[in-house]
Image (cartoon, rainbow, N blue to C red; front, side, top):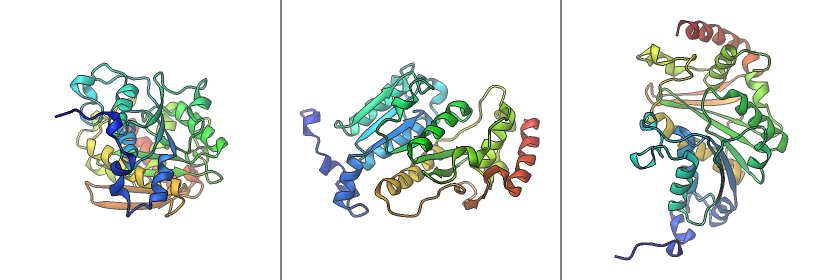
Amino acid sequence: MTAPTPESFDYGTAFSRNIGWLTPDEQQKLRRSRIAVAGNGGVGGRHVETLTRLGVGAFTIADFDCFAIHNFNRQIGATMSSLDREKSAVIAEMARDINPELDIRIFAKGVDSDNLGAFLDDVDVYVDGIDFFALPIRRQIFAECAKRGIPAVTTAPLGMGAALLVFRPGGMSFEEYFRLEGCDFFEQQARFIAGLSPAMPQRRYLAVPDAVNFDEKRGPSTVMACDLCAGIMGVEVLKLLLGRGRITAAPWGLHFDAYRQSLHRTWRPFGNANPLQKLLLLLIRRKLRGL
């Protein structure tokens, strides 16, 4: 049998089964769209694959890290053949194996203050996939997205569920929602958790509390949560790009927890300054100090 070649690829055929949920014109709009994904590990790698299979035609991706064995439980690019390889290069290779026509810009050293502008050039939607603890660069990226009028989507893998927040141009900003300015590392993490998951359904089934270690910047994770994040993110990005469907924009949030079979739609005017959030933060601070 003759091996397939890039010349045998046909975009219309490859993504024809999207038609019905999308119109042919909408599919072509996705083909002309560029998505930026910072972080190509647990959620980020799956985000790129999901959006590639949706038919998005261009990506800007960034990750400074390489795949290691401890990534195997959840990261789509982590295999024996990818050990010690750059995450961004592996994910780009996987995406091009689905759509060889893809336009992919790779930032193999990750995103920093020096290359942030170039990273977001020509981007239609930013999708957050960076490490939970990397708040300084996350804050810079979301601020630059707001400045440029780029919608920004984050879906956090929490326990065995996914929490969604969208920051739209002209709406509540990342900083207005999370209110991290002037806080130390501990308080920033507490506020980030509270803002991502006001309902906190995952806290009830954490089986080994010692697995959470903020000093070592590590916590438990599951592949199911990453998969759920990618599906929810893909739908929200589709709606943003096509301009149809309800958007869950801050201060609204959405959290689906598969383990508890629960769905929470949250509304927190003033973000973490909301009275309900202040009460939640008291609980989170006590829990984190105990951990």
